[in-house]
Length: 207
Image (cartoon, rainbow, N blue to C red; front, side, top):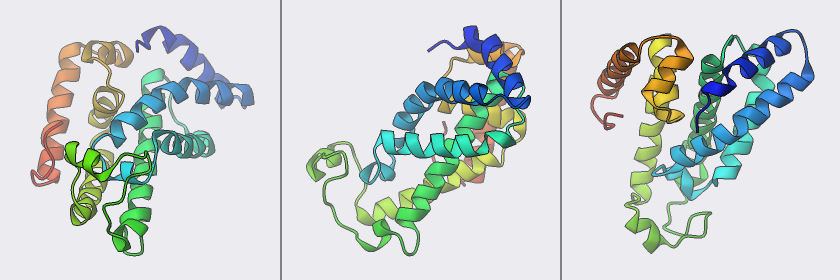
């Protein structure tokens, strides 16, 4: 979904929000919703949290978090706003992983192979190469470490990861949004991948 055409509108909404315009807040949330729905679907794919949460559930939790935290927004353009939205979804997923797979979590203490919330059978999940119960605990921890490592990246690299990997934007479009050369985006993307790989001791595949 191309968003470069929305750049001026989103920048204007951010300016209106800074001036205290509540309607701008609502419009920014609507703009983010379709992007975040796609993002939630992608981030749950292959993630052990899919066993417990549907895409719409994660989306609503992220939108609530985003609405509460818009007052902390320091963005001045579309790219920064999208990165802010992605950060809120990462944090929502980390919270869910802790909820279900922390020491007192349901997933940690009720290790069964019952169907997931989307109604798929355990056999269908096996075809998707979902891990077993113990594996889901380990997977939740690794996903949490990945999202934490993304938060620890330098700002320029984290922004590129948010836009290229999480929002699934072409590097050429990211370059337009950031106002830099496409080669610059490519360099930041490669550096970020290497940092994440090193931070996770090679446990997660390169993005």
